[in-house]
Image 1: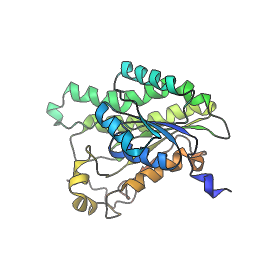
Image 2: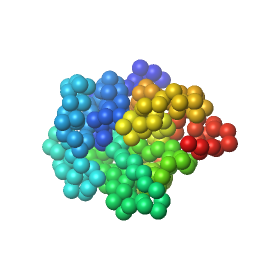
Image 3: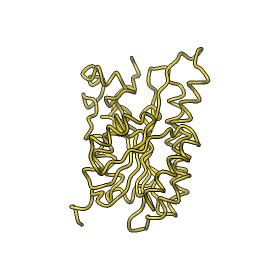
Image 4: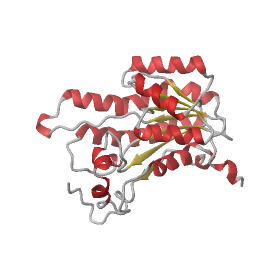
Length: 262
């Protein structure tokens, strides 16, 4: 057993959607530090380029909108111009939309399902060939879908489409894993809990208060989520297929009483 290479991503090529900020940026920074060449994409081109520059020369910006098939096709075409194959895909781009049940809009529903559920499916479909090109039984390619604990348990907020999309993504992960395993492409998911981000402003702005309601008594930090992604992406995760790794400080599995109080 060679521990020195067990968690290494040296020589690997990764694509991270929503990679310019939040969890996506944590993944990108950690992957580059682990030896990977990382492409990041997001709708805001200026932010995408600024993040890539800040991370360093092994991080390349490919701005784009993966919420539409047109945008996905354009992104895949850009990647194919630069690479013959892809080792790691992280479907991280997502959106949360909150409106009361009686007022919840079709716009909010469609935007949530398009980015959170439709996009990961078609990213996996369109990139199957590139992932297969470099994959083998000895070194499988990896797809990591970023779900949420809100796909595993209820939260108290009016985020109906978010719940539905993230629960769907967890099961979609299992189904696509069964399809792609014969190509030596391992598909898994991560279900993060409370991490500071623009999407989770409560954790970002009120970390101490939010942490008091978590069994681990704190919100997650960048190392917590990055370590989970490295584990699945590296050789350490080669025998993990179809599973969802919950990274939440115990909210889903260690919270007594299952409270969803605000």
